[in-house]
Image 1 (cartoon, rainbow, N blue to C red):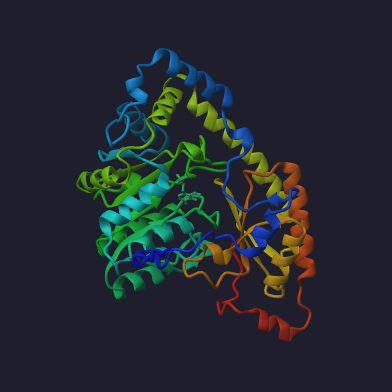
Image 2: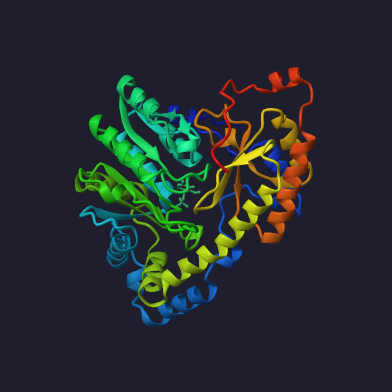
Amino acid sequence: MSTTTFTFASRMAHLTGSPLRENAKRAMTAKDTISFAYGYPATEAFPMDTLRKISNKLYTEYDPNVFLQYAPSEGYAVLRRLIKERLANNADIRSDDDVLIVSGSTQGMDLVVKVLCDPGDVVLCEDQTFSGAVKAVQSYGAVPMPVPMDLDAQSVDLDALEHMLSTTPNVKMMYLIPTFQNPLGTSMPLEKRKAVYELARKYDIVIFEDDPYGELLYFGDPIAKMKSFDTDGRVIYSGSFSKVLAPSTRLGFLMANDELMRKLVLAKQVADSHSNYYWQVMLAEFMLHYDFEGHVEYLKRLYRERVKAMMAALDRIPQTMLRYIRPTGGYFIGCRMADDIDPDTFYDIIADRHVAVIPGDVMSVTGHGYERDFRLNFTRPSIEEIDRGIGIIGEALEQARITEPSDIENSCRSGREPVLAGAR
Ligand SMILES: Cc1ncc(COP(=O)(O)O)c(C=O)c1O
């Protein structure tokens, strides 16, 4: 019998498997695992009764050609209009740019990179960021380049950004998560957003504003989206219904300038013709007749309680061992352990005790340099799990403390300045 030789395309060279590190995987195998790892919604977040009612309505009252037939690539016209109205009413985004429905914001990023980037082009990103976006960039042979974060300012370091823009050839785009950043939980202040926009203007590059968490504000006032003050059509705004409805709908959207939109639609036709129409019609019905805004308010109440519980539990851990950034919304809290804690020992202990987190290196653009950082998700675990799991994290930090000064030096393998994460 002959065997087949597969010679893979060079674009696959950068794509590796699951970003979960071994310790998280190990922790996840136990039944009693407390997972702060994945960015999943809570089980209670799914509006089962409403979805059942809308689904029944579709199958009894709707023409099946509306939701079961092949359909336009741009998406369901009613849903696109409703999304534009929501952006105007809820986020003050009153752009003339059009909306394209995509199969999750994951596909939105894929299409944008496909349309804009040649191999070798550079995409600037926050130094710790969503690994799916990094992989999308790499899959087209483009190069994701990390911009250092100024954690105290909850922003990319503007001097470093300008330096990179002025010295790096072929920068095409900046990929940013300005609101409730993944994994850090930071939100870029308005003046920083405006300064980044001005730099993008000066160097004539595009900004991809990824905003899947933006609706989930728990404390304080919302900060204007970059898209809301985009006068040039250089901001591509990306939204998702994974975090406010259900990830399996695979529904997201892009708002982009017309010239760009024409290319995105062509790329979308090649990719999958159109996104799932059953879910597009379900969502439009939800928005029109079943109080979608009330559902989002419910989610905010649910998750506000969880993030408060997590912050209260983290506050019981001395700052000399752990610091974290207090998020005002979203799904995550970014943590950093002190220099006298051995990260490997810490990750081993929590894995043995069945607590899973995402280590910073997994979310680092380069894959290293952030072993002292880790990300906690607070939306999926219950309040009881949050209390118990953070308690275990506190004990593990204590046990992973290094007492010999020479050991501290050895454990500082990242080579980064040992600055602590921003204010608690
Ligand atoms: C910042 C960011 N962008 C995009 C996504 C992907 O979302 P979607 O489910 O819409 O593809 C995620 C998911 O975790 C995310 O954190």
